[in-house]
View 1: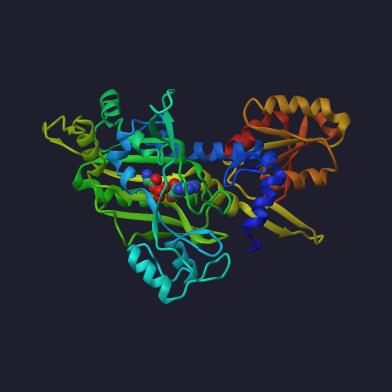
View 2 (view 1 turned 90 degrees about the horizontal axis):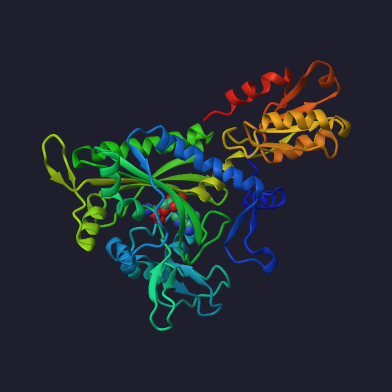
Length: 457
Ligand code: GAP
């Protein structure tokens, strides 16, 4: 396996094979928006399903919700977003490009200096002392740092001049906090229990980019575990482990993942940690695990006037639970899955094979049905009809069988079923394994079992 991977190759493959297209492309695009195509849509759905299966379906004390994107604006006052959700922005006065001051420092020091714990003044001083030039035009002529608001605003109401500002949610977790009492009551949940959801979030990022890594519209998979203070650090450590194991089980290599404990904590946080993945742009955040103390529920109690408390059914003790949060971007994880799966192999005949070694549970198509010749199409469609009742299947009868195998390798299809003339006599087919390229012969009746047992997550 070669280590040769770069983001451009993955972006080109995604565009060429129908994973991801630039948003609004026929209008010249719309910067940092992306549309998932036929195979990308399946991949991302499978990524979300794997997460949901692991953290909701298989977790007896976790309950899923699907909350509204538009929330009462008071939610964002309570969460602190209306006051504090902003990034330190610097303008280059020469070329008018905008940059995040912390990114300028980190990029300039090649990741050796972290700006995480720096104040705006310290960042300005660092940039001046180290003469950090504009990455775009190379000049040194910066504005002072200004805070750039990250929430997208829209308005509600139809009468001009009487519109109320509402926000597109910048994170999904507030929908979990505001439903704490509803879920606890209806599910008769006992602490520790968690509320999870998957949904869209929106952020007016200053420096979006790197394909799906940082976009202005993205999906988050978030989970809030409500617990007693005395058990909270154990739960925090458990989620750190579980989040990493989830990635390892999806096929991520250990050496491509690392924990990054936060140096600077928000005033309410008791601990915070990211898992970094070795993206082609370098080790960067893939997900976060946060110990958020009682802050979220206390703030929502204060701002809504509803006591967001839990009553212990045995002791009758009333208290505000601590919250442990686990949050991961579905698009960022999809990008990581693509990067991890991408490989270029040199075959015995000297040709290069591009292959995506997805975990079979994530692969867009589980099986491709390939009649050796077009006149075997009728039998092949019979097999397609049978298998597509169970799995997403592809069907391809165009071009040489070798080319068709290559096309399936490039979209990561784990199994290719070939229908040949023997199939007509004995109802058997060949099934080819994407990773080993080995082929075996199997009765058509055994295919569903054969594939089902190999695509489980
Ligand atoms: N509720 C906590 C929260 O939102 P975050 O670290 O801001 O924490 C959590 O975001 C995860 O969401 C990140 O680890 C990343 O995977 C994803 N994410 C955040 N901003 C993103 C963006 N602009 N584009 C794509 N994914 C993003």
